[in-house]
Amino acid sequence: MVKFPRAGYRNLIAYADVRAHGGDNGTAPDPIKLVVPMLQRFMATDKAFRKARAQFRQNPS
Image 1 (tube, rainbow, N blue to C red):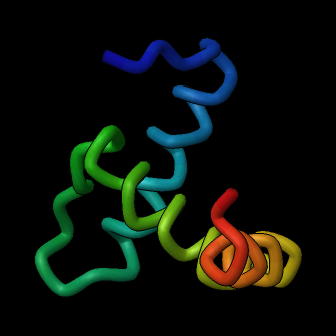
Image 2: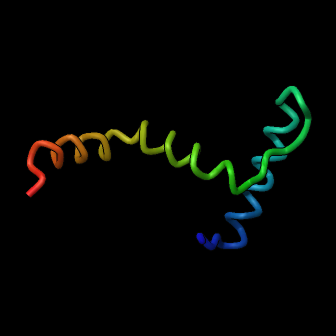
């Protein structure tokens, strides 16, 4: 289980609401279910993380 700071959780709820208004079905996604795709996107676009990960794979000492 992951515990979120209140402000972070409020922002997730607001983000879900914004996504609902831009989507086809008009229902807000579960805020907690947004966390994994958001983290995946963040890590995929983080150049420093990708570089460090590639170096680790080459030399996993």
